[in-house]
Image (cartoon, rainbow, N blue to C red; front, side):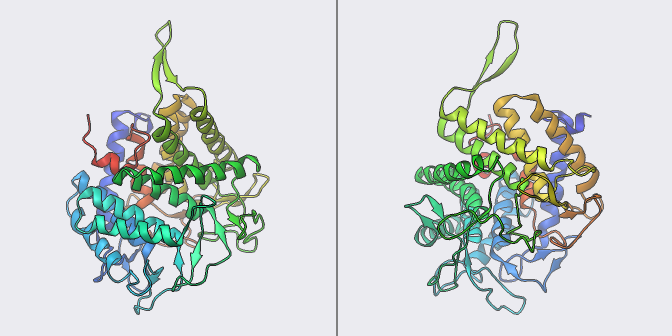
Length: 426
């Protein structure tokens, strides 16, 4: 069906409708202080839950793009989130950002790399959108990140400090490093400071080494010396941020970020036409080809392990190191990344496999994941594609879903999505 085919007029219209729905759905996120409320099933703020920095940063990012896209009210919403990041969520005594605030305005403990990476992303997008204070937020976020989270010697980021930045937890993780790559690429695109793109490449090289050694299933959790901890959280396999085993959605997301970094570092491949008029991508040999091949290995391992792996459509949340599903739940963010990465890999390789995958993901999205009644996307479904709320009740934010309405049509693969939205289209 044309509705699900990349580059068809029907698919563009479908994604445009989803984009507008998502931006409208999220309008009620700001608290009086600017921190983002967690959104419920119909977009009603759940005011009894904490207002967290990572969600507030995501909302600043998406509504900064909304402002650049002309969605009514987005500029004010981005400004509200930025107010929260510069105000109630900012630790004015110790620097950096609290994990969040409870409904009673008590500070949630610790300073997390994951949240600080999203503050960088928020600042980058707000600056590009011309939101007052965006540049200052980005500069402060980069300063704090460089001081406390980035390990220049290793070329990786540490994970969690205590609130005072005096004690560093021994855990090391790739989820935070993955979003650091996203944030560093966004910062490089927004500021022109290429050291952040170089850093992203250093993280990527580590990740690819671990992935190759583990049959392209990425170890997520590590000890303080970066020894993989393959048994981490075996007793809690469906953890929100530290699940046991391989997380196929992250393999897919890494594939996209690696492709973005490779294109931005080495250049986008040109089209070539053979003697009988067939056009394909001319991927040059060398490092660029190696990174694209690695991205394809990650994507193909993740989708072969987890897509339609248990007799029903959908992508399983986690698998064991043998590739067999462990947590069969379907998370909306995993699908969003599958949509993005299949489109990106198609645009780089012109391999019809990715085009067909994209169409299958689109049909699954429309059939099961979009909430056609209340708006946004269901965040968690069970193995039979029925609503489940054990890990992700409600609809916390619109970040993954909104990006999945934009990234498939960003043909400048090496450009971060907010920068692409900000650039004049030719």
